[in-house]
Length: 390
Ligand SMILES: [Zn+2]
Image 1: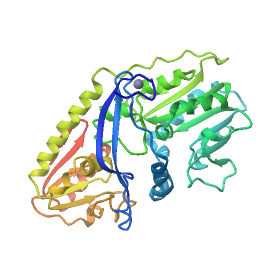
Image 2 (image 1 turned 120 degrees about the vertical axis):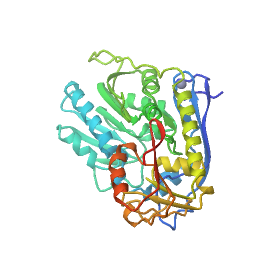
Image 3 (image 1 turned 180 degrees about the horizontal axis):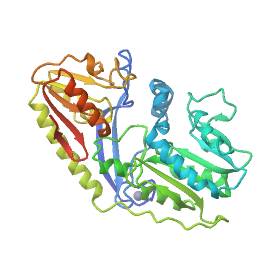
Image 4 (image 1 turned 120 degrees about the horizontal axis):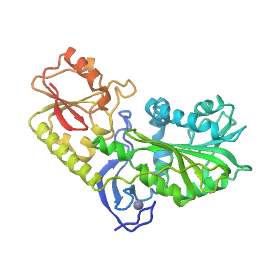
């Protein structure tokens, strides 16, 4: 049994373990593809708050990922700027903004670039950022290059924002304690993290990555906030790929009714693991009947097939297709398949295609495949498992 880093119960058991799992899951150049380190990733789940976590990342691995490998992530790929994450965040912020003290000051922790601060400035807010990444925009005088938890600010802020950074921290409680020092008594803390509860509900087979220490569900994030004297005053997470909380101190002069955040239903993640096992079995069975297979989508589902199922080893001929021009011509770490676009793919007879991209694109992609030379069977991976489409 392991101790849950959020609720501290000694109630955590093994969740998913992947051996030889690359420290970067993104297409890279041919030169780099075999230079990405591989390590075992072992995760645990707390029986009490259902938080999923890995053991703290070593400083050495963190350096490798953030200071070396992140250089290969194209800037446009910044998670927090993706529309499905950006729009609901801005909506929650807009709803809560009338209750924020004015003129307001704001600090965004892990801001990446000054581009995001521009949104807050449209409200007349004085916005600053802090980011530990060596790739942070150093030309902006409003962004501090440093580690938030180690930085002493000369004044408090009315608003603190953290988007997609809590899941990277070894010590979540340390973050909340620091915010406690830096936030005005009636200030608001906005947090956005990936919603792993929604990922599992959609049967996304892989949501693990070495640099993510924490895999929050709405309840586990709420547990960490409450322990540190915060309460949720606005939230957005139902059916959404991210969890967004607006939090105030329990003892804030502005009294707002705290929201009740429900626990994950009993057996939810056990069912997920079972459905994922069936998906793996179905996929392995389809792949065992073909020699030539095309994978459409070089994202996390394909990483699951490559690195956890290790399913490609038995195939004679594999090709990987992706519509993203940033991925084309590159390779997923430790593979020999150059990522192509659909138009350039040379199709063999009696082959199989697996749609391994986000299901929201399936409809569009199916019509492209029908218009191409491809003649074999097409399967997709979605929230109901593996299905044959053509
Ligand atoms: Zn827990």
